[in-house]
Image 1: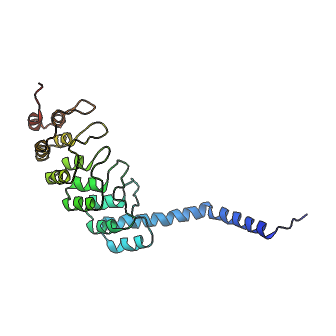
Image 2 (image 1 turned 180 degrees about the vertical axis):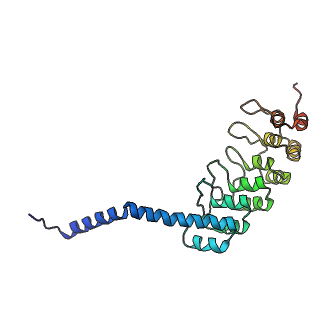
Length: 225
């Protein structure tokens, strides 16, 4: 015996059928392919530093905070790789999250500090990037990078001199471990404590010695009183 369905019942069945169709594997795969293609173009524009390729993607609604397969957001990649025209466009995007971190907790500001891009350190700070944060900080990265002027810049902008990573490592320890003598001298001149030890009991002198930098280790050695 057939059952007569009322208007609301027919509409409900139509809606359920539509939802089942929308959730079909083929359609989901198609949607993922489109997003995947946009992501590929997004990171290709960063690789090429091509704003003409990037701009229509952003204008079409692509999230400027899109991450690559390793979890690196676009702005971080652009700053890290020196794609500064694209980085400028991303930085101006209304929805950009300047402090969006990758899976290692690294931000665009940390990359700029590590690479020695002083102008971009300033631009990111002016845009509101966090100079002090839990765990590794931009100062740690600057201290292990090639340009001690970045250490000075960050300290002048309010970086905490004795900020520690999760295991108690300081910027001075990082400078020592990477043999960055000028950065180490600058940190010491600003009052960094060479006596501090991290959770493994290592001092800045220990970091230098383990890295085979005995001369720096001797300079950092603090006599026990």
